[in-house]
Length: 128
Ligand SMILES: [Zn+2]
Image (cartoon, rainbow, N blue to C red; front, top):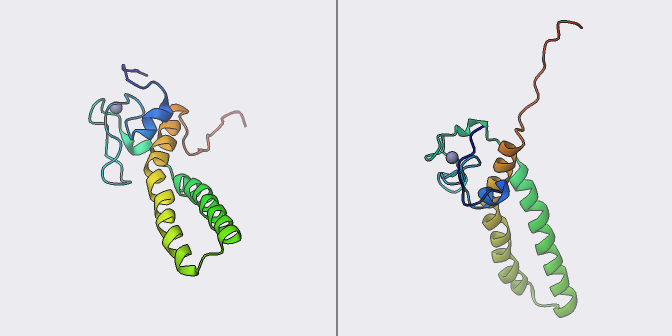
């Protein structure tokens, strides 16, 4: 595997920046969450990349915990009217779900490339 010089050697930082998992310089994303066909710098084919539901699961679990804890704390301590809850938590839900989605997808794809993770396949054994 050729490892070209990169400003960030860690796959996690490459993923957080939305860069190619091999060279760290080419762009990974086209649009908000769509992937490019290949790296525009080193030519790595991105067809191996499949983060699946991983980014959404992390966002739901972490973002949900943040919003629910904040809402419960606010209700218990301040007991504001319901419109205050709507004004506070709806924007917070958008922030804690949309902002981390792309970096998380980048990190999972970078780690998938780094660890050579792929679907399991059955192999035919001749001695069995
Ligand atoms: Zn690249």
